[in-house]
Image 1 (cartoon, helix red, strand yellow):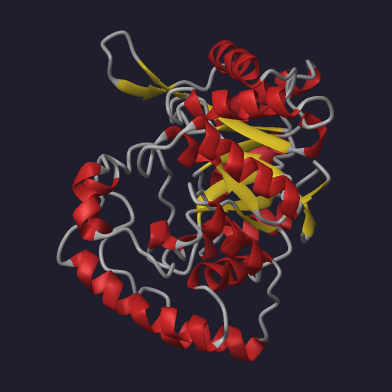
Image 2 (cartoon, one colour):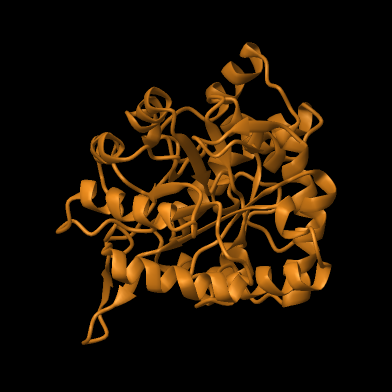
Length: 332
C-alpha cells in the first residue's frame, strides 16, 4: 500500500477507510460487517481509519473499539485513527456547532472510551463555529495535543483563508473536504493552500457517493436513505443525468481493465502527494476495488482522457441541499 506523509503525523496509507458507513449512513450494516472491512484493511496494508462521534451516534466508533478489543494486543498500533467532534444540539434541540475546548475535550473523551484507546492520531473539528475565531480553535486543539489525547489536529470543510489563519496559530496536519471527479471545488484554492502549508488534504466521497462506481446506488433505494433523498444530485432529473454522464467513465475504466471505483481513487491520489482518499463501503469486494485504485499510477495521457470524459462541472445538481450547506465554508 502506498504510504504518504500526513502533515506532521508521519507516513499514513494514501487510501483510508471512511467509517461513516459503519454507522448505517448508506444503509443498514452490522458490527461483523464493519469488522470484515477492517480485517481487509489490515490485510491490504491500509492503516488510515476515519470516523466521527456522530457517525451512527457513536456506533461507528463503537464498532472500531470492539474490533480493536477482539483482535487483541498490537492491533491498535497498526492503525492511524482519526475522529471528529463539534456537531451537537443546543438546549432547544437545534443542530449547532461548538468549537470550545470544554466541549471538544468532553466529546473526545467519550470517543476514546468507545474505541478503547487513550489517544487518537488525528482529531478534527467537524464543523467550524463561525462565532469563534479559528485561531482560538486551533489553540484549543493544541491544548489537547499537549495532553497527549491527540497526536495531530485537523479541520473539516473549511475555506483556504480559514486554514491559513488556523495554521498561523498552530500547524494544521489535515483538512478534510469532499473531493472527487464530481467535486472539483478544492482545486480553487484548498489543494494549493494545503500544499503550501504542509497540510494533508483528506478527500471524502472520492467515488462520488457511488456515481463513479460500476454499481451506483439505484434510484429506488434513495427514498430510504435520509441524507441522499434530499441531496440535489440524487433527485430527478439530476439523478438520471448523472448516471448518463458517468456511463462514459465506466466504459473508460473497463477499457483500462479497472473497476470504475478504482479509477476514481487513482485520479484523486494523482492530484498530489499530500492528497488522501477515504472512501466508505459496507462491501469487502468493493473495498478491494478501492485498494486496487490506490496501486494505479496514471499517465499524463490517461489523466487527460479522464478529464475529456468527465470534464470539470459535468455533475448535475449542487453537492449539498440548502440544509446540508449549513456548516461547510463556501469559498468559491
